[in-house]
Length: 433
Image 1 (cartoon, rainbow, N blue to C red):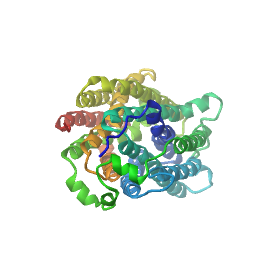
Image 2: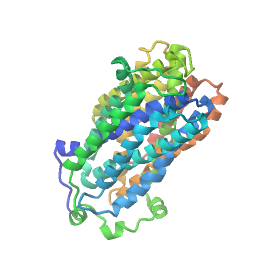
Image 3: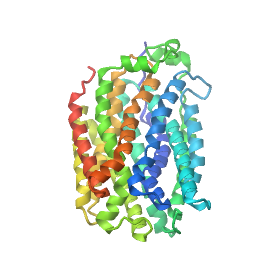
Image 4: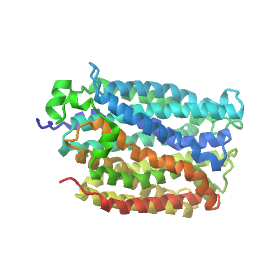
């Protein structure tokens, strides 16, 4: 087997650049789904159920895309066709979802239409996102893999910043941040429109700049032949997965459950803590929604800076542990910051954990999987460690909210506790020597 060649910085950059556009779409979804459905009339105790769809689609779509792309060879590439189809579908859905309340439908029909659009958006984003991770696994050697995923983390967070601040920026330039009851404000609608345009342009750039290896060249650099890779059985793959696959997955379980609770409840938590209201019909709540987007952007900026520091720790497990611990502290601080500018500190700390969640697990797991083959299928299955905890958290969210007194702010304590547990589980990971 030949050693994969070192790639220049710009080749590594081009390999992941489309992730910038995909992450804008993901950021718009993460920051605005709770706000959109609360505006459409959803009850806070039912809010977590709307968040079942994103991870459910991920756990279904990504293993399928990974397995199918392992077997796909076209003149356009191996992974890129799935990237392009997913991005195209995402663009269409991003233009429809925020208009759910403007179609003259009844409340129940609006909710059903919104859920259908959310399901399609999650399907398409997952289809577009997975190929970037797999192309790094296919084409980047072990020495450069950490650098490649750090670039991907940087682009991911840069895209997040853009997506998160769009509603705030569009409100600042004059678009309306309020609307009739049950209708999403123009500031949010136009954020989705512009995000969709950037997404398709970024994906077109990647498809033009990246040329995947043909089957013969791929076989020279990867230890498992194409013939053997077509015989993937998910249950057999999971049975034969290295122990690190499961131990990293345990860390993932607690951290992604915590992130789900942030995405679900943080708009209301910030609105209650800073503006002293959780009434979605008020201008104050919509202002809180915009400011939460700014805080998400600050979190992403913090992640960008922290991602550059992670390789300097020397020991990736140490960096992983410290990052998750800081994020847990950040969650605990949110209800103790009554001024909107004070909220910047907890979100910067959360950004440290987010940077580690994007870079460390995939560096550790792809190194552990070296020589196992079926890289696309394994990474698709590993996505279950991201999706399954969110599904569990979403199912339990309403019950936990009632248990702790129905205050969305208190859900930040739950998220912080989950991150503390996740940080301790890092010590159980055994790195491949």
